[in-house]
Image 1: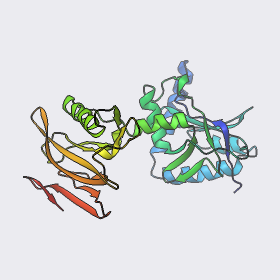
Image 2: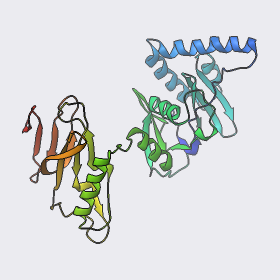
Image 3: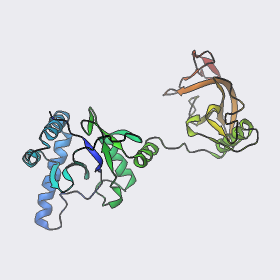
Image 4: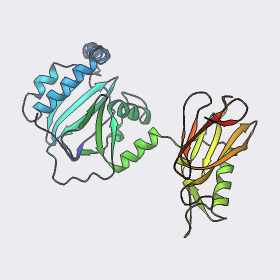
Amino acid sequence: MKPIALSACAAFFAVAEPAFSQESDESSSSGDEFSEAVDQHFDSQIKKKIRQNLTERLLDEIANEKLNEITKKIPGIIANNTPAGKVISILSGGAKMAFTISPAGPGSDMSGSCASSEGELFQYFSDRFGGPGMAANNAVISLANQGTTDVISKDPFKYLIRDSEFCEKLSAWKNPAPTLSNAARYLVQQHIHQGCEGRSGSFSEQGITITDLDGDGRDDLILSDEWIECEGAQQQSKTCGTKVCEAIVYMRRGSTLDRVTSFNGTGIEVGHGERPTVSFLQHDLSNFKFGWDGNQFRQR
């Protein structure tokens, strides 16, 4: 199969009005049938197999005139020739995702790139622009890919996106900043004040863990000072050593967050489920794990 690459600003994803939405009664009936065919197609047991074969055939036939013949046989797939290149549109749940294929330019810059699955992109646009099927001109973004194909994974379908601004927005959507209670916000500021010795600073959200640690249904808090950045020459918190920094665990007790324990470590990870395991690397880079036993934290 001849590899196909996307050029800079040569592709886009968009949430748009369904292509089968018409105004006349006759067209509406036809559109309903097409919509139903699309839903049945994408919900079928052989969805993955069809899509894999379809993608391979589209990429293989992209340079010739057989595209329209192929896409006419597959509900939910539309191909059009435009001055910018060949546009492939995929309909799913009333939303449309389209990408334009054209020859890639040499030496494409890969900085600011990110990868996302097809499902994530549909959900992102749906959440951001008011739901599938909503007309949203602002939903169009530039994409590019320096490689052999825009599809870098088939299970699930995954696309490489070279648009730093979009990648930042997508990352923020995937990893929303934690919502801090007044008590948590106060503790964050106290950590910055003490760690920076009164100077201004910031606390990255990566160092703020909000989760229920003891299974009482209320959010507890872990603050890791390795994510504090102070203004001035000494940017690291004074609670950090050469390899690890202090982290403090606070438990929700009524309207307050009480300090329960602390440790010196880095690379903190919190597991899932009731009373999750907390793990971190110690000064000698050995792994330490602990969790709530019903009365207190104990090593696991």
